[in-house]
Image 1 (cartoon, rainbow, N blue to C red):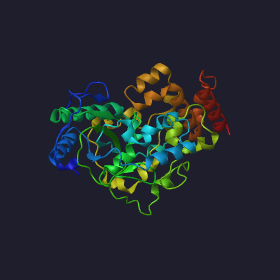
Image 2: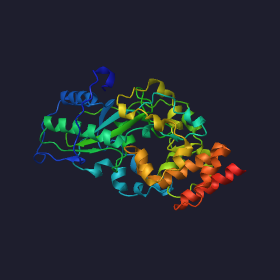
Image 3: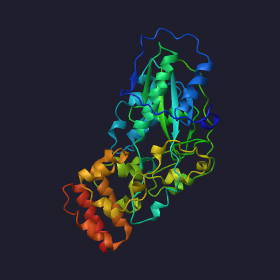
Image 4: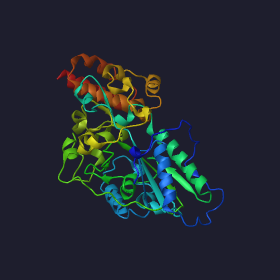
Length: 378
């Protein structure tokens, strides 16, 4: 396994074209014997492109995930995320997604914050936005890097084929990354790495080339339950299990409509996502430093004022969050979250801000405004 601190960092500025797949110049007709040398050069190139760590596994190295996924969906723990129930054969078996694939190249990119993300959670008049969304959308950044690595690989093996994926495809990235030795799935179900901590994105390159694989990393959570204890909504029914319906990240980003009153107070001032379980992990003391400046928090998104966020109309919302993952959730869900945070602030001066939205055209916004007004009037 090669890591970023073993080479001289260099991140080129050129970008990739659109499209996830790179067809080969001709159909795969056998690539011959591939030595470990190709893998070493591939990893070296990937790290020079800005990735923090790389590992390789086979598409079929995760036989347990199909049954896990079926149970998760059957129990309804995916909530409104209907896409998780779609194409379950692909999600549960990466070999089904692309039968010709022989190897999966898993790549991690650190976005470790340069500040304590929990500080803003203690600022009741400010909104807490998850670290990963405080600047540019990682999907675009990671995908372009994946494409550059993919092009390099095709230059070495012109008869090969590849497909690149980052988050949006029916790929269970965390189990594959664990199989590729990047880390292990912690008790909070997120990936943890000895030299990465919890703060990193994942991307994958499926290829028809049969590359040497890496072994699994040993799971070293031990008796630690810091991540489980940190969860404000008890979203973990057991270690290594998540009920998304109770998770603040799900409730603030994926859930459409009013959030159940059971969870509203627990949201605190978290208006987009939640980092509590990630921030609690002791392995973060070894976390790789973020090398991409576009992940460094923009000042205006680090601890934005709730009073200013609540009055954003559609145009102002799109402008403020241009290029950020927050923009994808659209104004209604976001302002709903802001109003819950206002209701939780305990600040009576914010009551008038909420009162101005009780007749909002979006019912989820109006409902949240009424709740905030009532809570601040009690």
